[in-house]
Length: 295
Image 1: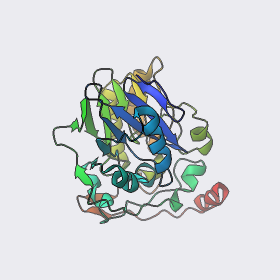
Image 2: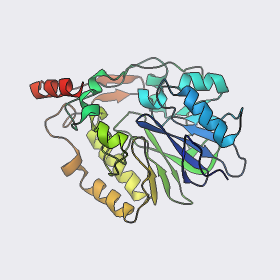
Image 3: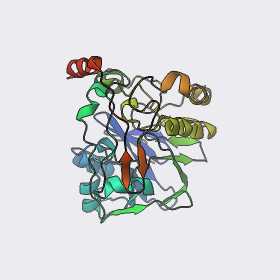
Image 4: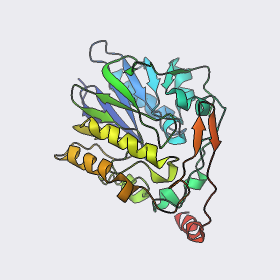
């Protein structure tokens, strides 16, 4: 078994994490068939790095049996089109993500006033327009199983994105949370780049529905994971992680949900065709000043 490569970090049996500048993606191997799946695809500039990492882990010319997207935000699906075409691989996502992966709808706007930190302040500049991989993307199986990966299940965890999913392996209680939560303060560029450990809610500046986000954290807490990896931040497996996640879920409305911001009291409305409506933007001169400071 390969425990690491120059570009990846070993997480658990058959699971490796790769960080593409500030976002994580995962290589997960079926230990019986030896087939593997790529979970998320990083930034649009990351394809060549991902291919090299795959070759280091599984051999030159190896290709995944499937690509699974936790969601379609630009930092998680940036290289999906080029990789799916190069590898001739199917892509799987939740049905509620389909509008954003087939060119039909942009995501709800970001809220740069939430969270503080350079990454949050600059979020108004992030691309939230759809991509079109309609020739590749398929819906995840309704039974909750993850294609190719025996022993894994996917869970619907919206709030950060309408069709967000997380992955869980019962055998060792390993949680791949995506952006349903973070293992660092993802709004902070410094915390993200230095991999400062902090179990946190989802990246706050791109949460369109805070009630759904809180319900998703509660769903993940009920799994009682022993190891947590996410879209942003380092591996968390220290003692007491189950208790920390439970406290995050219980206190979510008190300490995580922002006050007096765009989506704090009223979510964006979405359906299977994409965004229906969004609450009005809250005018905030301080937010504008923070954006300038972030730049």
